[in-house]
Length: 437
Image (cartoon, rainbow, N blue to C red):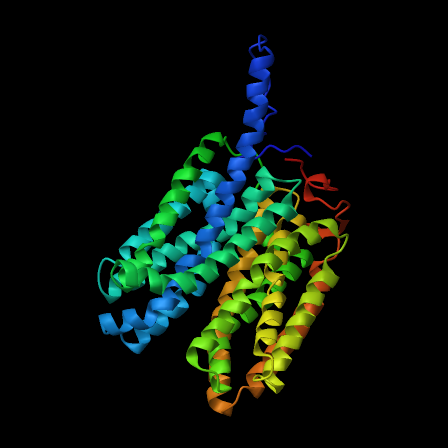
């Protein structure tokens, strides 16, 4: 299979047209060939760090913003729910964006939207906050889909390592955004300054990413229609796996501190326990895709992390006051199914266009279902008056997730259920049917 793609330009493999390169010139070219992928990796990691910090930073100061702007309960709830709904809705349009402008310019546009939204949401009142959050999250949603595509294009033989690096950056960004926004706001003038401070990171990332777009060429791969992807059992297995982990992740982020509060912990300690669950994900998020890329099948890896999460949830259900740090850590380790699904976007597809279509399909369905998760768990808590039923439901979702892990982890590629993924690295997989891009 050839590697031509809208944004693919093999680093260091361009033909020599001069015919007169001496040793010094060849040395310079070799250094450039090594430097460009490294700069590309740094840029991808920086982009990933932006993809959660804008969300968790808002959650950290939402109470302050609500008081300052006299926001209604409806507006506050909308601000809290808007990111995940936007992630699901905008993801559907991202393959179209890739076809129109290419993956790398598309990511530059996504970063521009993120930057503009971060600045606009602190420039006015309630309407500006909601509109700016929508624009910023639209940029994040496009970035969520585009990053796996760019990894497939630029690092086809290093999908596991690069996915691990950018997944860890996303986890770290989420934790830092939650922990540092309030102190930053105290230093620079309140919640508006705290939120606006993250626009500096977005601006720097955009400046670093823009040179990457200069190495983009015209589209060359055939389209991967969404209708064809939706007929693939492999695609649905990955999509449903992404959906279950999304529901679990957003429920944990929304309700874990409240569970600890109801168990008698003070607010500061309850918040710290959520930070523990997020921070433990940093090394886990890095290691999991690396392991996944080296395994012939990934089902046991996903099911094993899910089992760890079940132990943590069971501990919360039966003895939340006993070893609370352990329960938080186990739940955080269980969240490693998220980077596993990100790696599967590339490992279960032949081309970057297929990766884009699968990524959009899985993230759209997954995030839209995840939007219902925190709401449903909150309703169950209010109706039953305890956390027994909500936590039991989460454990049941984990059991479904374990089964889906084995289905999504089989060595198959989208488009032909009978075709095994015959190598450990997606770059080495060969198509068995259909046109060669």
